[in-house]
Length: 380
Image 1 (cartoon, rainbow, N blue to C red):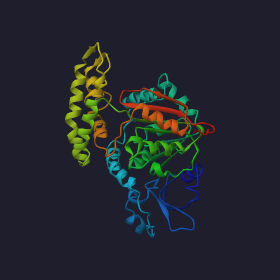
Image 2: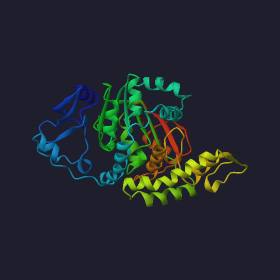
Image 3: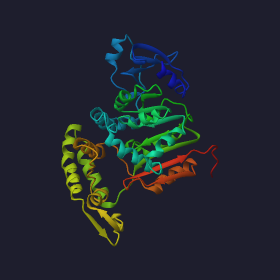
Image 4: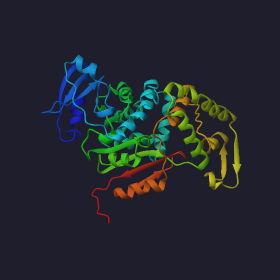
């Protein structure tokens, strides 16, 4: 049972070794089963190949599962208030990754996305990505989405653990189940089922700002990195005044919509991005506009509006539905915090991190690559 062996290799789940009971197996994977806490009535289900460690309000309805397998539902702890807040954001991403299962797996997607990863990591180009990943033996990717990057890392021969709180976990499993060195779990990153200090590399790309507290999420994942290991995260940058106003105004209108209605509402914004992109027009500003955060220089018109006034994403590498999904991804989540570099640097100082870089991969976000100190010093 490679799944369980992989999981055992990174911890004992808060000091409690788990016992596996298999109800259904397929092609070397436990498709349905439970992981039991010894000397306890508590168990975690394995659903459609994915161990689920969600608790409280985040836990899926397991009545049918329990009845089918002759189990008694365990008594749940009271959910923390933050978990209830997180559940609202999960609705967005569960819907998104049920719809867009091949995102990043199409050749035209990979060219764009892996080039972006190379910029986020401060590499020369994407030809350096395989070597970058091969320096790590154990990798935790949080928020894998479709699993395209988890799959790529696993293909480099690394042991990969992909963790997602939403139904993206099942999409990732579907796209990586042929790789015995990739294990997917559904869990809250604030309650991750791994011991501290066990991963050589932890990556959370565009995830932590969708939690109730970005800083707390950074701290939680940082604890999973071994001393001397690396941690990468990408969070939204606080944008200029006009763009920030539009972001908040549209989110307030869209985030309460059912997902299907929000996709429809985003279509006009996606169309604007497409038509502006077709112009292929540029303007040059001799003077910056500091009050709006607009620098001097030559600007593509679509990018000028996109970065400074309204997120109207468009990229010719994607079809219309995928472009619209990117705009949906921005406007529909319940939580979508923006931060400044000064703010993030303060978090790192408080963690005792001194070895880090901000790689400016695009104006919308902050890419952070850090190395955890071998031994933390005491700070006054």
